[in-house]
Amino acid sequence: MSQDGLNSDRNSKRRLSSPEAKDGSNFRPKTAKIDRSTAENARSDVQLHPLLRDMVAMPQASNPLRQKARPKFDAASLNPYVDQAVFSRQNHRSRPLQLNPQGKYVEKGEKLRLQQLEEERKEAERHEKDAKGILPNVNTQEELFKPQMPPLVEWWDRPFLRGRLYVEFAEKGSEFVLDSEFAPVTNYIQHPVPIDAPWEKFVDDGDSKLYLTKAEMKRKRRNDRQIRHREMQDRIKLGLEPPPPPKVKISNLMNVLTNEAIQDPTGVEMKVKQDVQERYEKHMKENEERKLDPEQKAKKRELQVEKELAKGYCTTVYKVNNLDDGQHFFKVDMNAKQLNLFGIVLINPRFSLVIVEGAAKSIRFFKKLMTRRINWQELKNGLDLSANKCVVVWEGELRELSFQKWSPMYTKDDDDAYKVLNKFGHENYWREAFDL
Image (cartoon, rainbow, N blue to C red; front, side, top):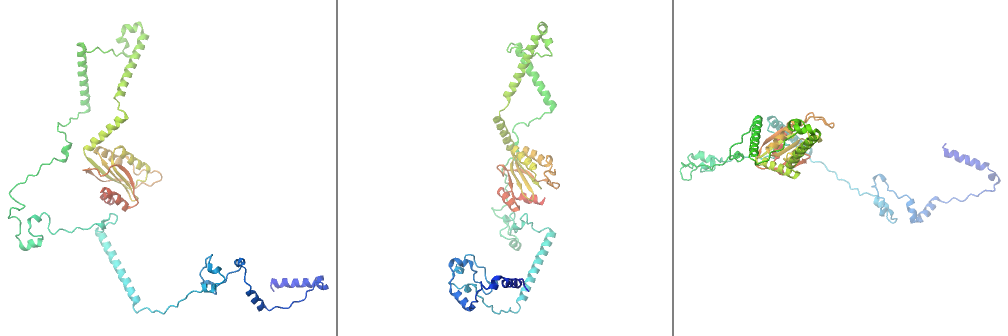
């Protein structure tokens, strides 16, 4: 027996055992039973108040699993005058019976097999080209190169042939352009216009400079100093110049000022110290006057750079496997700026490319920095630089500068690197560096 049945039996026993039930004072007569169907019909005629409609459950479709989710605020569902069953029905269209034509899947299988055979043929052809070393490199964009067909007639043979094809010459055999006044080969001699060699513009018209050794320079300075001293002595003897005051020091005080030093040694010593201090101050003042101010120094450096650049432009291209270390990048960037070099440092996830242009002297100094002074495999900041190295890709002379300043540039992939270098006409540097 269920728990509800037990509870109902206990309640009935309590009612029978209560005094009210025994006395009959609280006795209620049984009412007549009302037909349940009649009550339900009466309730259906009464309309529900609009404010109480949210408390009542909405009508459900016959099959709620196939009913689409209804929006929260659906005007049709809140309208009591619309039959909700209409919205719950789904328009179902019966699919007609369709039979596949004969050979449909056989044809699809044949197409797939042909496609697989074509892919295998292309893969075998690619392996064959790769083994022969003629497979185009995608990273260097070799597949975009258009092969150039040989000309019908070479340029060195064109002036000598009347026809436009070698076949016509082979058939006729004697169609040369050598029997007229317009023949390319005559008995006249053409002397070309003399052109100066490129290096002659850097050679002085006068005698070449003679460079002395250290000992020869020292001996030359000593001889010049002796000549100037003799000239000064001759002018003093002739009375053209006053004799210079004696250069007295503490060490030669007694030898120069014998009598005065004996009479008043303290005063003489103070006077000698004062003379030494005056000579020192005069010397330092002359040195300060000869020094250049910052503007003059900057102008002097600019003149030196222009003088070096007038001798010719040089360039060097370096490939660095990894330039992520901040100290390495700072050394490359700062030295290029201090040496007044032009170019770019192109940083890429694959490798970095450093292109420098400028005077030959600055290029030599920068090359020593890149190949000797910087330790590219030094471990710093937890980076693994054991395989890092710097390689010279190309170096040589230029007719004119390709870059107007020095600047670092960052790229994400090979295509960005090609676009950046293509602006300056040096995309071939990336291909050369990629092959190293």
